[in-house]
Amino acid sequence: MHWFVVDETNKNPVSGQFFIIGGLVFNEEQIEKVHSAIELIRVRRGYHPGDKLKFQSSARPAHVTIENALAAKQEVISALREHGVRMLTYVLLHDVGCNQSEQARMEMGLNTIAWAYYRLLAMEKAWGCMMIDRDDKQHAHLVTLFQKGVGSGSKTSMADRIKFYGMTSDNASHLSSAVDVALGGFRFCVNAAGKESVSETGQVTVQNIFQPLSELLWGVEVGKKRHIGGFGYIERPQSVRAYSYREKYNNLKQKLETYSGSSAEPAGAEDEP
Image (cartoon, rainbow, N blue to C red; front, side):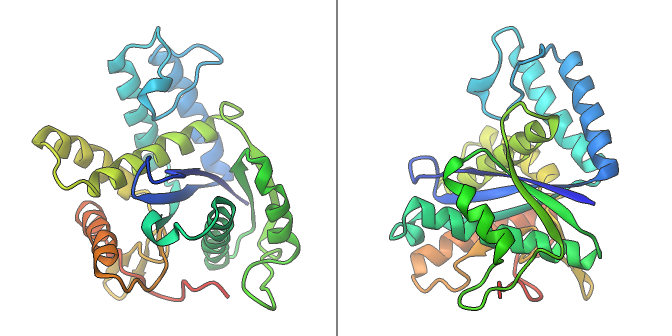
């Protein structure tokens, strides 16, 4: 059994160039190990019960030093790597998706990320549950995902693999903290990749975050090359005609490939039905 815990970030262009949805896939053994690891990290780094452990610096409790907060985030990512947790991410350039409503962007993103999870489950002959960060606007869409599935026209059901959809919230579990830290780190690096210039110190910071994070992205061996494109990293739309927009996607893919040592180009059948 697997659990996929999902969140979204960069919901508007002010936050960053790309709208991002992503999350972490845990199996039963990993849930216990990650839970225990984060319990120890919180105690060691001075987090009290009820304190939020998040990637965003502004969420740092006043009594936790900057050094301890940074170390806690690094240790969370290290624990995820150590226990083999996988990350799935979806990106949509705001310049491309600006003609759609926020709800339409969310639904399209949830469809795509759910289908990626379904493919992972199918490859591993497993079943699982999918939880999103609480958003009451998405309740009806979760019902649609379970009852009807994805695709246009005659939809393809995913109920044989994804048997439960639900919502969770910040601080309702250590798994949610892990997702916030991992996805927040991914967001930070995606936003940095989109900047025209980054200071030398900034480049080192991005590399230190992106290197371990990129290793979490679900990858599949295709020939002699590991591919994250179409698996742990999914970009939409699949075809971008405008050169300026395509360059922004290509720049992000190049950064991902540099730090992960894997191809970010799609490989295999990533298409939704």
